[in-house]
Length: 158
Image (cartoon, rainbow, N blue to C red; front, top):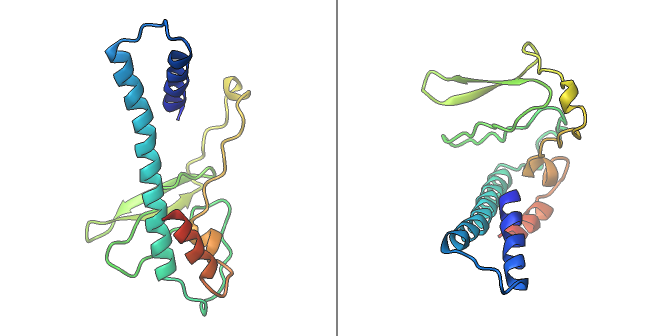
């Protein structure tokens, strides 16, 4: 993150310039900034491991091979009662969420009826946004006859 990079650079500056006075508040802020980055990375890694375990658990090499769409996010359907709603932002339209009769959130997919505003002239200098991340199943299981590569990738994550 930008905050962690800033504080890492600042700590390096303090290390190289011994005559610089550093307050306790500055040290606490620097520690918080660096630790926050570690927490975010740990949370992302935990989410990736959970997604990988769920995708491997429902993998069936006998099922039809479905091609993953580049424009719409994929939802990994669990057969358990704890279905997850994919909240990956879509760059092609607005995602619609609704409450089911049992009080659970479900995705109605990406809608083209609500257009995304076009880029204004002040934003024309910005690069295009990155493409949405592909799910673990799309990267390691779709189109494969076995889950060996996915299991190896999961072991690397752990």
